[in-house]
Length: 134
Image (cartoon, rainbow, N blue to C red; front, side):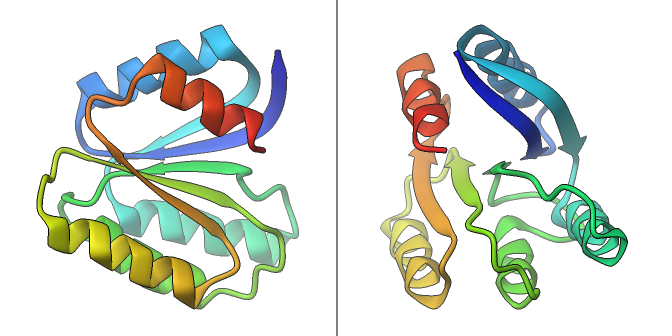
């Protein structure tokens, strides 16, 4: 089993969060999983981690449509932060809009972080592949 120190799940849907956590615990040893209902609370926590020089997440699951700060706004803020470590960001969305997929491709070209686009519900096999890539 893969050993992952810190994972962020940024999603306002409790069913999606529950499903991701359940699968994660079955495919990897996850020491710390943090949940955020919007991008603002997550980006605030990441800024705090940077200031404290603490452990950044190795893996982020990110919804697009959330209140306060959506996934796109989170990505804009995140890629502007001084983070040299490569972080795996997995967009997990119910959107079937091709524009959203193209927008995720654009973000890939703007950053050194690994960004992947996944449809909800995310499957066990997809999470297994994501955790293997870390």
